[in-house]
Length: 304
Ligand code: RIB
Ligand code: CA
Image (cartoon, rainbow, N blue to C red):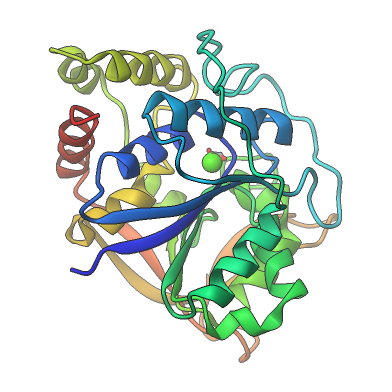
């Protein structure tokens, strides 16, 4: 399978961190052309700080990190209770800060410039709210036909959400952005809660990870233990695992609609028969071989 050349748009976030580490550990399957950050699990300064910290921990200071949007398109970010990601977004472990800076270019401009420079080559992997992706499509519509694919974590097509309005968090933070992206017609693969809630961290799996763990693994395990106490599902790593081994997953095609009604199920996504007749179907992942997925994560993290 040809190597995937990707931009990861993220809101680290512990599961974002594991998704990044999995990608760093898989250079034969994934080339990370850039990391862009967005508000989500924590504020934009913190998601950007965390992306830099994770890249530095893996020795990948060579990968450009560009900060993006600090708020959703329409509604300001709604504060939610104590995050499963901790106050700093990475489990409050006191991880050292990176010594290299983020790039000065805005994430939206980095995405546009990269797609225009390498048409048909780049897969976008949003694993947080889709604000940066939506604004890139709005600012430079010509990239719509030049993006190879979008593989994202977000939404729930056939199952309940994980926020108050039965929405999934990434979409709930910015449903308007999700609507722009989902209606773009770009070839898309969706990792919603339908599948990611089955990527669980069990005690047995923690015990396996602990055996002969490297220093990086020990940090990742400590993050996951803090995170796992609130949400034992590794949502975001499903995206990078798919790029490494798509046979881990199965799915169906469906048109996905987003509820943007503040008085309704704000942020909820649902698969519909044919929707508005305008939106293209999305490939919705519904099944995972979670044991093989975990073995892949364990095997690859040991390479770092
Ligand atoms: O609902 C799970 C998603 O919300 C994950 O991307 C997690 O990092 C949070 O952003
Ligand atoms: Ca995330």
